[in-house]
Image 1 (cartoon, rainbow, N blue to C red):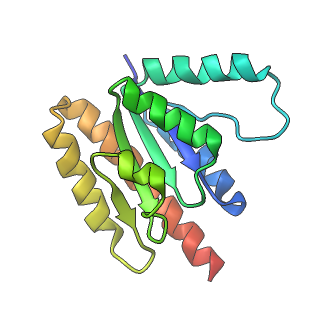
Image 2 (image 1 turned 30 degrees about the vertical axis):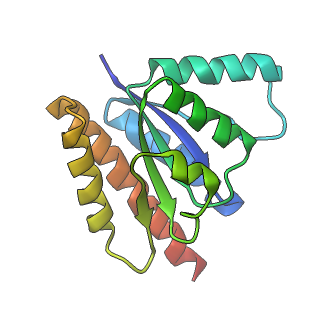
Amino acid sequence: MAFRVFLSHSLDPAEQALAWRLQTLAAAHGIELFVPYRGSLTPFAPKTALSSVESAIDRADCVLAIITAEANASVQRELRYALAKHKLVIPIVRSGRADLPLVAEFPRVFTLSPQENPGKVEAEVVEFLEAQRLSKEKRQAAGALVAAGLALLLLFALAEK
């Protein structure tokens, strides 16, 4: 069975492609990554979209939260739902966003700064995953997905400069 991850993200508009690139990379490695639609023109009624998101969170082995911009109502709803369902949440927050009220609700937060070594954050996440007693395969899958996400975030940060 595939490792299932729900990606909750608040990305700057210029970084939206990161979510889809991460989904493509995950699929190439046998990871099922659900990325909720973040457009204004959704093909589903809001109630249907919400139940679809909740269903995807329910099926997920973990939730990867990438927060680089203000966490909108959808992101807050997704992450609070995941926390209420006792899902494993891996929040990666860009430095400068760690003071958001939502961030304080997580038991553990991983802060990414473009000036710091991303390997440090990756090692912290791997250590966190080991403490969660996930199987070796799930730890490796989640670690690989986080590493790819960190790399993409840093590439976007470098492209801004």
